[in-house]
Image (cartoon, rainbow, N blue to C red; front, side):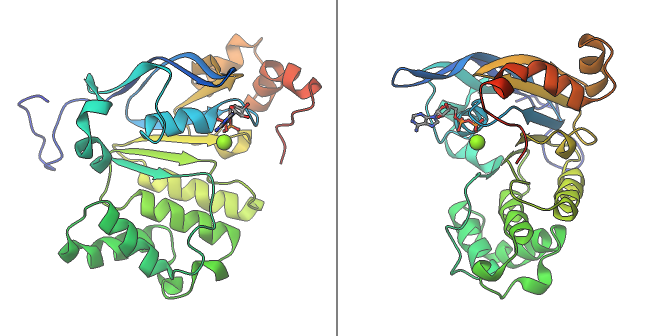
Amino acid sequence: AGLYTNPNGRGGNLKMLELKNITKNYGSKQALDHVSLTLENGIYGLLGPNGAGKSTLMNIITGNLKPSSGTVLWNEENVHDMGAVYRSLLGYAPQQQGLYDTFTGIRFLSYMATLKGIPKKKHRDEIQRVLNYVNLTAKAYRPIGTYSGGMKQRILIAQAILGDPHLIVLDEPTAGLDPKERVRIRENILNISGGKIILVSTHVVSDIESIAKEIILLREGKIVGCDTVSSLCKKHGDVKNLEQVYLQVFEEEENNGNSHTI
Ligand code: ADP
Ligand code: MG
């Protein structure tokens, strides 16, 4: 950490997450193969078909899973050594949902706020803030089990932004949603993104094409591209959109029976 502190009190200097040579094996299955990556402020789209290793990578970034080898650094410090400090600057919406169907929205968020160590006296304001962000204030006292798929994803995003973390990891936040709900999630992500590092995984190109600063292409555990949409299009023979890039990069998987559609 530097000496400079910027006026909003969040600490100045560039914030940076670095992955260095991350490999992950599940038994004999290699899910990640020497993944190296540097993320700075902005939205990054992690794009790849099912089984590419997106969730594994996100679980390693969030500290829920240990890599077989390699390190994750936050501003050049190993996150493994940062413990609670790292967790307090991290928000995570996991891929699976439905764990808290009996909780009301508000109870779920206060539970998560407690887990995150947000002081009790700040809970009320903070929960109001995040509910408002994802347009769920009106549904706060309903059980999550009664929510639509889109509302469930939005309450997951809401808990991820509790405490205003600098690094936000969203694992397939649009999975199973209809086009209208997808647009809402996209707008929510764009709304929370100012001055933050956001990593969003998906296998649906349109979810991230218009909002991501850079797209990370993950194929069979390897990063095969990390660039702006326009640069990726150029590199892949001047194709006109990310869909075309996707088809080129993941063609083999397509033929092997995996699909990038839902
Ligand atoms: P994605 O999120 O891109 O669909 P995952 O990270 O979930 O990919 O999975 C990557 C690969 O690792 C897949 O082949 C998957 O079957 C395998 N895998 C994931 N989790 C486990 C696990 N706990 N044990 C064994 N293999 C796993
Ligand atoms: Mg996944």
